Image 1 (cartoon, rainbow, N blue to C red):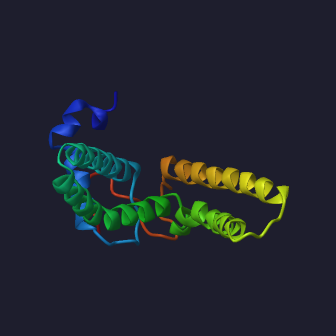
Image 2: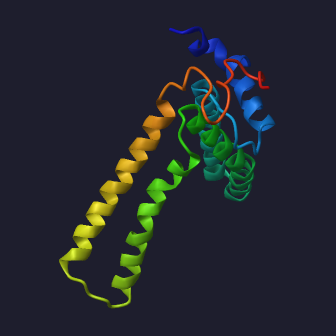
Length: 168
C-alpha cells in the first residue's frame, strides 16, 4: 500500500494537509491540483456530509443548520479544487457543466408535456437518449478527475504540488 494511503494519513498528516490547502485556496479556480488534493478533499466533504446527515436524523433543527453551514463552507472550495483538478489533466472546468447542459432539453420536454403539448413517442425516446447522454458525460468527467495529471507545464500552469501547502 502506498505511504499516502496508510491509516496514519487520517490521523492528521496527509488528509488534513490537503483539506487545509483547499480551504487556503478557497476560491482559486486557476492553477492545478493533483489527485491527492482533490480526492482527500472529496473524502472530507463526503464524511462531513455524512456526519451532518446523521446529526440531522437525530436532531432535525440542529442537523439541518449544520448541513446548511457545512454546504456553504465547502461548496466554493469544492468547485475550485474540481476546476484545478481538471486543469491538471489539461481540461477546462466547463466539462463539469456538460451533464447539466443535457438536462436543459429534458426539463423543457417535461414542461412541454405538463402543459399539454403532445409529441407522441418521440418525447420518450428523446428523454432516454438524454438520460444516457447525461450518464455518459458524468462518467467522462469522473474519468478526467481520475486521470494522472500532465507531468510538465500545460496551458493552466506548472505541475500540481506533490504535498500540501507547496504552492508558488
